[in-house]
Amino acid sequence: MTENLIRLRMATADGHYAGGLVDGAKMLQLFGDAVTEALIRHDGDEGLMRTMNAEFLVAVRAGDYIEVRAKMSRVGNSSRTFECTAHKVIELVDPNDSGARLLSEPVLVAKAVAVAVVPLDKQRRA
Image (cartoon, rainbow, N blue to C red):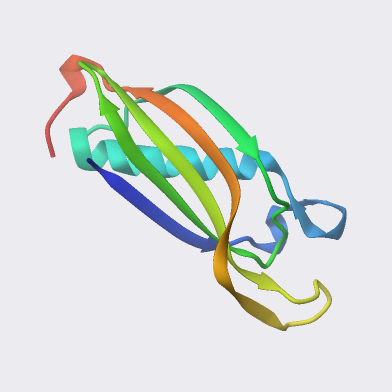
């Protein structure tokens, strides 16, 4: 099945709350981006997000590096179900310093099950 990976650094502008805490909505946006790319690779179309049920498990801060994965787990006639995960792989030692730490094991910060739809007339197998 199709799997997509996005790795990026949370920018200062992503810090929405005190201490550079990143809003959970940013993780949802990244899950949506990963699903969209997977749909393009699978169907040749961006599709439409129908549902996303997410859990936020660990705080993410500006400066953290996040790996987002969307793995297609089910294919229906027009629906596509995805298991989405976001892992922190690098974090700043101190928000006021440039030191950073590569985590020995990625830390699961959020997960979601997403269902997207690609209408039959839009499916162009990539």
